[in-house]
Image 1 (tube, rainbow, N blue to C red):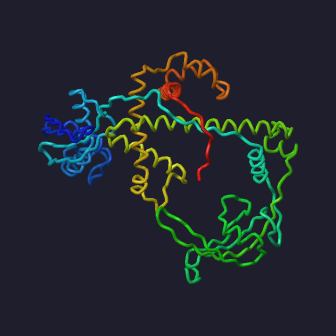
Image 2 (cartoon, one colour; image 1 turned 180 degrees about the vertical axis):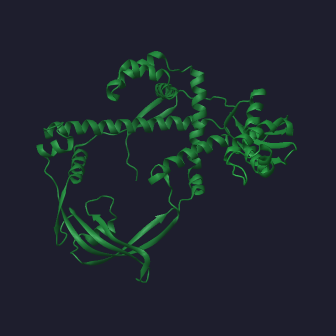
Length: 423
C-alpha cells in the first residue's frame, strides 16, 4: 500500500492511498460470505448457491458496495501507522476501482489548528444588574392569573380582557381575497402584549359578526411590505381573572403555598434568581466573546459541520417522528447558522487549550461533592451516584467546564451596570 499526504490548508489534509488488488481482496471475501445467505438463485435454495456463482453474478455490485468500508479501514491503518492526529470525521472525496485492479482513494481529514494562547485573564466585561420592582412583581402575578383564567361568552368587547375568535382572510392591495390565505378560527387575546397594535385597535370595541379591515407593516430583513386583513368576529369571550387570594395561591403551587404574602415573597426570590442567572450568563458570554475575538485561527470544517449537524438534529426533535417539514431547506439552515457554528467550534478549541494551560481537571472530590448535591434530587443513593460519575466522561467534562468558567470570571475585571431592555 502506498500513501501520500498533501496539505490542503492550515487545518486540512488529503491522504492519497493506493492499494493492490491482493491487499484488499480479504475485504471482498468477507463481503461475499456475508452476502451469500441473502441470495436467491434459481435452482438453489436461498443462501445455498455456490460462492463462485455468487461472485460471478453479483461480484461487481458487492465489491462496489464494499469500497467505502475498504477506504475507511485503509484510512485507519494509515492514521495508526503514521501516528496522524485527525479531528472530526474524514470525508472520501474520490475513489477509483476496477475489479481485479489497484484501488485508489483520496480522503480529506482535518487537524487541530496551531493556537497561540493570548491574554485570557483580566478581561474587562460589564455585568448587567436588574432590580426586581413591585410593578414587575404585580405584572408577573397578573400573567399567572391570566394563565388560570376562565372565559364566558359575550356579545361585544369593552376592555382588554376579552378573546375574539375570528375568521381572518388576507387580501391583496385591491381588497380581493388571496386564495389559500384564510384562517377559520384565529384567537386574539386583547391583553396579550404580543398582539400587533393595529389588530388590537381594530378589535377593542368589536361586536359579534362585525367585520373589520386591518393593514399591517411587516419587515423581513431589509424588505418591508404591507399585509391587508379582513377579520370577522365569530365569537367573543370575556376573560374572568381569578382573584389573587389563598385559593389562587393553592392552585398555582399545588398546595405547597397557601398565604398570598408568602407566595409573593417566593415569587420575588424566583424573579431575582432568574435575573441573577441571566446577568451571569451575559457576563460569561462577554468574556468568551472577547477571548474568541483575540484569537484568530482557521476552524476545521469538520468541527463546523458537526455543530451544524447537532443543531439540525435539535430541530428534527421538535417535529413528530423527527420528520422535517417538506418545505424545510437544510442547506439554507446551514448557511443561516454557519457563523454560530464557527463561533462554537472556536470556543471548543480555545476551551481545551486554556484547560490544558491552567491544569484544570475533575477530581474525585469534585465528583463526590456533585453526587452529594444531586443524589436527593435525582433519587439515587449517593455512593451509587459517585460510582456512576467516576465512569462518566460527560460528567467529568461538565465539572471541568464549570471550573473553567469560574476561573475566567474570577480573573476578569467586572463592572456592574444597570440592565437595559433591548429596544
